[in-house]
Length: 280
Image 1 (cartoon, one colour):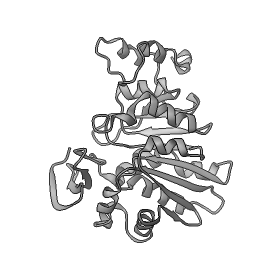
Image 2: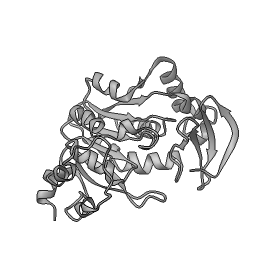
Image 3: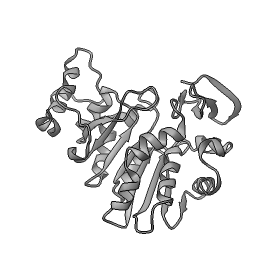
Image 4: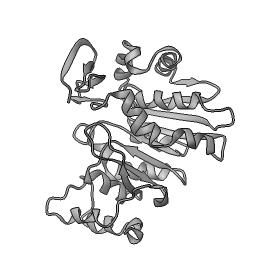
């Protein structure tokens, strides 16, 4: 997924240079590069922060706090981009409660070795080091907390209800348990009434898993060499481009991909999702 690896290496991660020329982190265990296309900071800003309308939602929040679940923190690119947005919000905006879920902090420790490349200079680097050392970093605008360990187990413990979810773990090949109907159902049970979820995957299996878990599902923005990503929401009306009945035709193909925990009638259940009764 990358062109050339830098010689600098520590623990189970290394810094690599992607085809776009940006530096990124590669997990040696998973054999995958985090944000392999346009680079970590560009992808975090475009795919997650901008697409989620985080700045607007902080300003328009009805309560004093907006909750963001960051699933698969990695080198914290998504979290740092969200933190930056929160820190520059006006005093009248909601405070951001940012909860990052990660079982291996090696990627963030590696990124801190080259802070300029990973947006970790100054206060953001200070915040990342506090998160690693104490599991928490707070300012007047943001509370950033780390849930260390298995993400699904950590989700069960959460009392906060997310308004936004960044779903950015390794791929289904490397981390299959986080791309199942069960995983998406778990976060759906925690979701707030206007929660939206954003992920880099546009696979049919992932979209079916989201539908079966009770999410309304739509097409997300293109980025890098990806022609589309995926957005999900508690309310279909919060999707700009919901999947319509034309998308269902691919599920009739003999080898249509499905999540590995899909029930036998998965296609029928997906087609019965409420969004398709009103879609064109």
